[in-house]
Amino acid sequence: MDERDEQLLRGRVYGAEPGEDPGPRPGCEYRELVGGPLDGLLVDVTGWDADQLECGAALITPLGRYGAGGRAHYEPRPGDPLRWDWQGDSA
Image (tube, rainbow, N blue to C red):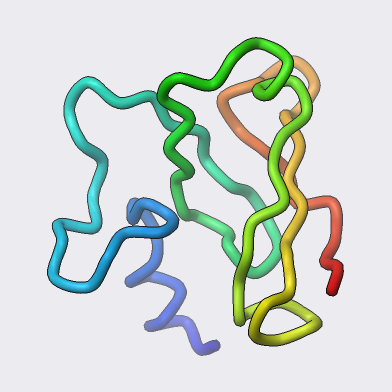
């Protein structure tokens, strides 16, 4: 992915459907993904409970080490839970 592709992804919501506005929606709660294949994307955590927020997420992405169907793992940053840091990829 080149720099132009990375800039297009920033501020976009992970999982936004084609044709949808890819930006954040009013009334929703987001976490910023930092590092890894989804760097700069926002993940919608609206309705997640405290345990789910503490654990982070394994998000499907074709951009990671394992290609289509692989997952990128993100966990809350200590001291800054609004930012989730990349922990690695899995198949």
